[in-house]
Image 1 (spheres, helix red, strand yellow):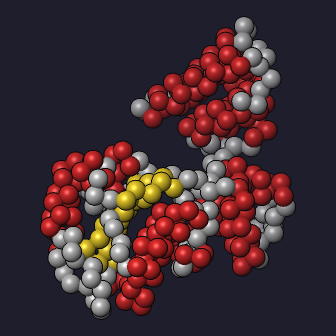
Image 2 (tube, rainbow, N blue to C red; image 1 turned 90 degrees about the horizontal axis):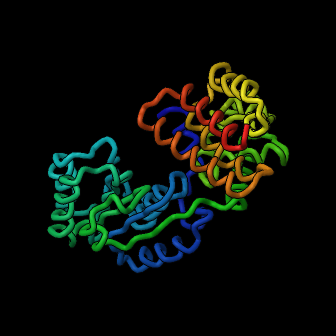
Image 3 (cartoon, helix red, strand yellow; image 1 turned 180 degrees about the vertical axis):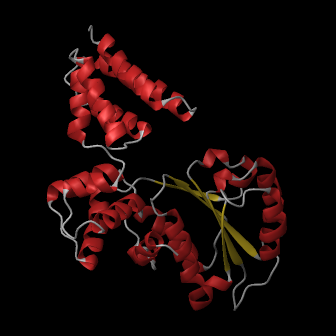
Length: 319
C-alpha cells in the first residue's frame, strides 16, 4: 500500500456516523443494515463522494470483525471480462457466509466499466444466488449498467459534497496532521476539489510534503491546477485583442508549469462565466471549450488546439 492509499484508508469512515455530506443516503442504507434486509444496491455519482466508503461501512456494520471473510471487492476497470464473473464472482457467491449471516456481499467498484457480456453473465448470477449473496455496484454513470441489473437494484445517486461538508473533512485532516492553512488557501482547495473528498485529501497530502504551512504556491505546485489569476489574464488578453500575449501566457502554463491542456480548458470554461461580456458571447466561448475538449480527448495536439481556442475567443469578440 503506497503513502496515498495509507492516507485514504486512515481518513476513510468506519461507521455511518462518520460519513459526511450524504446524510439522506446514509439514513436509508443504515435502515437496511439494521434490519439485515439488504437489497442489491447501485451507488451512482461523481468520484470521491463516498460510494466505496459506504459499501465498506455496510460490511463492517453487518459482519463486524469477520467482514473481510464475507466481503469481496473487485474493480470493474481491472476485472471487467466475462471470465471474472463466471469464475471469481460466481465462486464467491455460491459459498456460504462465515458466521450467522444469510448472505455475503460482492462489491463491484467502477462497474460501469464492465463489458456488456460480463453484465449479462452477472445478471444470471444475481438471479441464481440471490439467497446467498448481495451485490453492491459503484458507478460514475449508472446509465452504463444494463437495465436488467438496474431493475434488480435499489439505486442511490450521490451528489458532490458541499463546501461546508468538505471544510469539515479538511479541518479534520489538518488537525490530525498538524497542518496550517488560511481561509484563502482553504477556498482554493475547495475550488480545486469541486466536491471530491479524494481530491481534497490528495491535495493536502501532496502540499504537506512541501510544508506543514500550506500556501497558495504549495497547492499549485502539488496539483495540475493553474493559478486562477493566470487563467483570468489569458482570457482577458484574448478577448481584448492581445492574442500574442495570451498565447505567451498559455504556453508558459503548458510548457514551463506542465499544466495539462484538458485542465486548462476546464478552468477556461469556469472562468468565462465571470467575464464582463455579453451573455451570448459567453455561451459561444463555452461552446468552443466543449469542441476543444472533445478534440483533446480524441487525441489532438493540445498546443495547437489551445492556441486555436484562444484565437477563436479573439475573433468572437471582434478582434
